[in-house]
Length: 194
Image (cartoon, rainbow, N blue to C red; front, side, top):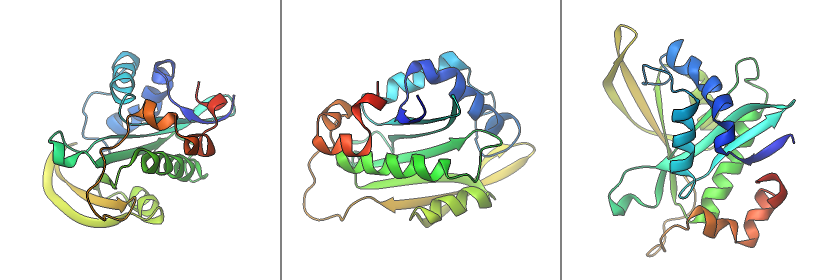
């Protein structure tokens, strides 16, 4: 079925295929070996108890994916996540990235997260443009933080406020707890997430 839904480990091969060019043909990912389907399946399985991985299926294939992950491990960071979005080659600039991110941010708000962060290897005008169009604001640059493709690379960081920071926050909900909330089905219908 075409549309947005939670990813499953069965999507790992398509996700790995979409991600591979970011590793092998560019410096947008600091990984140096593209993860295969098994590694991607493990990443999805590890993340889903805590944060969403989404896929957008169009024309019978996974056209893109987006996910959130813990920002850092110490407990005081629990209200912040890192986010990423990738779109299949040939399907960029068609609204897929925006659709995935819009849905992801709505789900993160339901879970009770306060801030989303994105690290972008520079230069990357397309990614910067998408993130800023989605409301992210630049917050800093790690200069020459990684070495890839024969050069030291900068990584810029952007932040999106998901909700006002007022008072002491409740811990974020697990993905299962969030899925039980009525607001979840307004973002993703239950039939499209199985």
